[in-house]
Image (cartoon, rainbow, N blue to C red; front, side, top):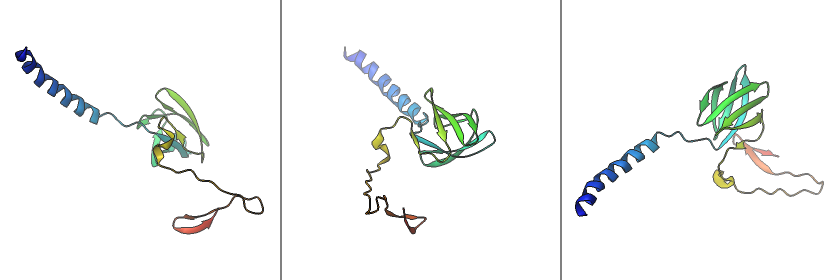
Length: 128
C-alpha cells in the first residue's frame, strides 16, 4: 500500500504543476464592453475600460466583433451576441454587478425638479 502511494504522489505533484502552468495561458474574458467609435469594418471597443481596435471577425479577451455599421456594432462573447450603440453604456458580459467596485449613486431633485450634482471632467469642476 505504501509503495503505491509513494509512486502516485510525484505524479499528482506533476499534474498540479502542469494545470497551474496551463491556467496561466488561458485568456481572461472581458467583463464589460462598449462601442467608442467605428471606421469602415473596424470598431473601437472599450473592453474592461481599455480601448481596443478590432476588425470584423477579430477577437480580443474573448470578445469577437461580429459586425459594425455606422453607430452600431454586434459582439459575441461565449456564443452570446450583444448589440452595442455608439456612446451607449458599457454592457456587462457575465461578471457580477458588484465586480466594478462602483457604489450606488442617488441624485435628489432640486426645487425646480431637476436632478443635478457637482463633479469633475479632466480635473475641472463641472455641474451635471
